[in-house]
Image (cartoon, rainbow, N blue to C red):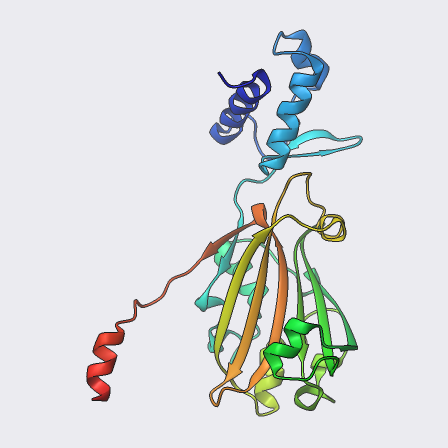
Length: 264
């Protein structure tokens, strides 16, 4: 037998998913459910906390418990880096995600700070630099409306970006086409990438920055960006609110056996 709070949480979750409780709608106050015989105050409170941890509702002082938007942003895979988007147009990666999801965006949804810092160990390793070498850190916080969706910090070798718009701390993308276009104009055309994903519990600072509900996890992204000759021109670390994204990959399935036959 599931505990009473779990049964109540499952019942409320079903009502949310069916649309009975719509996005933006406030759930009944705890005392209302207690009076309706749904359980004790502690039972209802535990059920609401479970719904919050599952990303279905958000609770705040003065607003109660409100149903969250249930359509997460598409976080595109290969398609978000299409050169036609940033080299020939002005659709930087986070905007490509919004367009694919059918959601509105403003260039100001991305803020940034730029600083020259000592390379953290993972950054130094990715760039092939000695520990403590100087790198530029371009940190961005991306929001949808008033709600943060993720942070992303890109690290660059100074000789690749010195004097470019990448080190300009003006809020928003680094000019038309963003950082990839800046690298392209500087003679560093991106050719391929490696992305690694890690799901984990957020730190207290990350939970505060991304306005995460108690119990909500994050997805940490490590992105290494290469030129055709294998030069690393960017290493980025992103922290994404897990419930606010749906990661989408559409790619041709490789056949290394056939590739080997062609080479022979």
